[in-house]
Length: 232
Image (cartoon, rainbow, N blue to C red; front, side):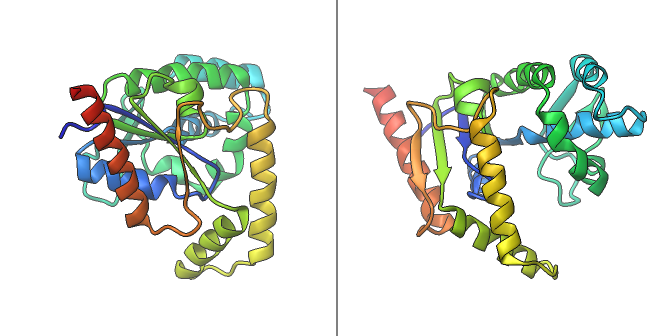
């Protein structure tokens, strides 16, 4: 069978988007593209050049001028893809704690979102890509061949994140994680620009009681249906 060329996977934080998209990309030999890396790249460049992330005009201008690309991994160092900013490999640099602390503010600026949406579309329209985010099916790539919206209760998502961090050897507190996710959900779903919501034609999958393998299997089942409809 031929898989859909452009796949959008949206959903709230900790709903399993990254894990699912990564597995599908490996199985289909597609590019896995977490669109959040573009906001991280802009944030890292701003910090590197000592541009305050509170300076919205300067950050917006930076987002409009920098050329960001995401490509299949070129090194076997654990990376899921290459992130290039004006041709420079910033794949691991954008994962620094300083970027973690500032990227949320940068991603909220309207001009930044507009500029990076255009760059995300450029990559998505190449095809053979599985794009992950919160506004892919609704804003970034509404013409995606297959749109998936992964959901789960906030309690289940907090539990998953709690166990992930425990497995990494971190000291974490479940109530704090739950509170943070609830705050993030409210922010994502009520923002004026590209709020979190399922596209009208998206397949909504609640993952509360499903394993990763179950979710991957369901998505591939929907992909087969699309392929059969296209052949018909």
